[in-house]
Length: 144
Image (tube, rainbow, N blue to C red; front, side, top):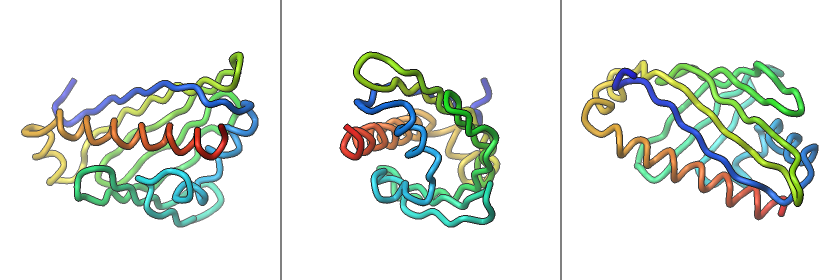
């Protein structure tokens, strides 16, 4: 894998029915109310949104997310901006709630992120892990 390519995964279980978890994840406009690292969301059209994220590092990441799949068991978006790729949630009903398996694969496009990838890739990966823990905690607080 290239130093400028990132693949992230995260799995967790939320104590809520699959339909409720699905509806929450599809509603991007509400992300800032429960996911602390999602700072702002602006709808660009019914299938596309501008999302501003900021995790532990003092850096805002502005991403354009485009709906690819909103199926109950698989949510997927394309990602464009300083990184390009996709993110997807696989949702599975389990005893006591819903299992969420997250996968994201992106390639840096912006010069700053590309250069940073060579020097501090572990730090950027840690920053993403902090963001995903914020997501898990926010979903459990909201739905659990």
